Length: 281
Image 1 (cartoon, one colour):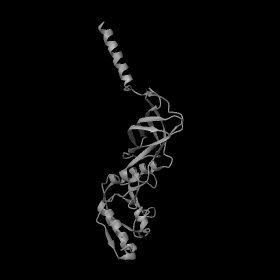
Image 2: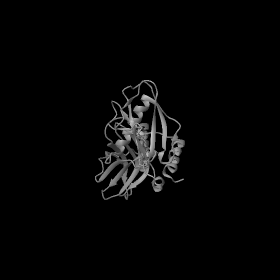
Image 3: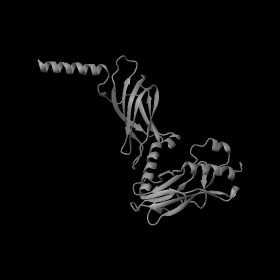
Image 4: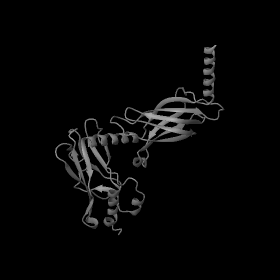
């Protein structure tokens, strides 16, 4: 009798859990008409976020309460409660990615159909296409940064301005001190931005000979000039201080780069250089 009572209690508990919606979601095939895309907006370059966009052409609305996305280069997740009718973006903090190829990933969602009295939660897995290669470039940036910062300690020094007016140039010294852990890694030059171009004396990708991360510390100068002097360009700017640092190495994709980290004071000095050069003062 005791065994029967225990079994009966277990059945009652299981029934109660099911009624409360606390049972594990049932695994099902990826919903017909649902497409997943992986992407990163321009502004998210500064925040370190990315997003999965779910596009629902199934003809009925669904609700998503959990989303996991990843590949052999990264893993991330989102939790909450959002409808997908007809589409929804799920933002998530992008972890530091690994070296590799491509930005396509696999996405697993916990979801249910809405508009039904007792729709069950399901879990389904499908592909997420990096259709604009923005996440691939993000992962390549992480790969480049991880590779170079493991090969050398990199320090940006105090900025200065040489000359006056149209003859002036903004100068930021950057020191590379090898850790001797990866002598095959190289610094391959900087790349300008939409707001600032590199002066002739600056190591510029892809024209600069690669600098191997070996031997004594070396200091190279990032020397820049305004690429344009129209005030509205500065007012609308979001990425003008994101100078690319190009990196070479055995596992680094061709042309991979990351953004040179600048302190608030260094960015302020950079933007304060514009009025004097452009004659706004």
